[in-house]
Length: 417
Image (cartoon, rainbow, N blue to C red; front, side):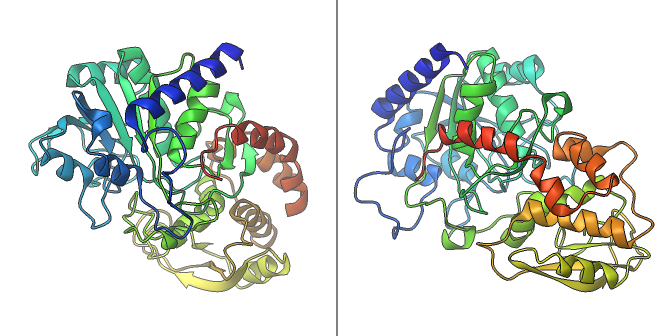
């Protein structure tokens, strides 16, 4: 990366810290310790009297996860506060109020609760999305969405696309940080190869990135955007990289219809890979991504998975009937993942082990014909190695060199230690 880019980022960080006081780019305020309850970026922004937004026409990119500690939506809170000139809302996949299923959005509408115009960002990027920002009349775009820590969960690419569009439209960009619910301890899994870039992975980051959205925004600005956007981040206080979501005291709002609990998020970076196969990933059940199966699968899969000795998890023979998606209305056999030690659990390694064993014990195993698995993993490597008979250790070993390189870059953008 060019030295001029790094110099720009250092300068913009210093400027943000000066103009926005404690909540802007910089460490948590003095006196806040690991024992202090975590406060989100929005909580700190509001506690500072919204000074960072003073005199600006604000548009917010958010969804149902943009809530306060007492479960009020930040759009409702800001709309009712005379100190904020909130003029527009931008909804991602599933929509601002969350009424749409996977692959859908709410379209252009006026929000019934506030009367604010709601613009649709889903499947828009570049100049088309920049035109939406221009048409909205805002001069500052604020992002506040709860991520789940996996590269193929699309909200981080909504963040990326909105940053790029804000740059093209000449808008200022502010990210309000929230916890990575599965901790920020480390990056895991294969790194995307650029030729496989899609909306489930725009840029070469690892499958489980171990970053917060504010850290990702800085990474995107520093490494991937053609030119950096004027970026300011409002950090959390009291959050540490080892924290799981249930230690935050924050309400869990499903970021999407099939992400009902933090337990789902814990396994998703690995079992989300089953979207690239003909097995059910548990959609249409009460435990999506924890239940996996297909017609013809029996107890042998759970036995084979347990024989791998994967850390932190046990696998139970399970039978279920999805109410929608794959195998709708049919009883299928498979496994349920039971994570008994989440600090030892490696979701990506577990996902690979389950793919390897599913192919071994079930003759009906197949990849989705559109080779979606390659887009999810970021290259052909995982698919071709498993097809060639590689075991779990061999597949995982195949990405270690590129993962080490990403970890080195990632380290420069971490904001919490």
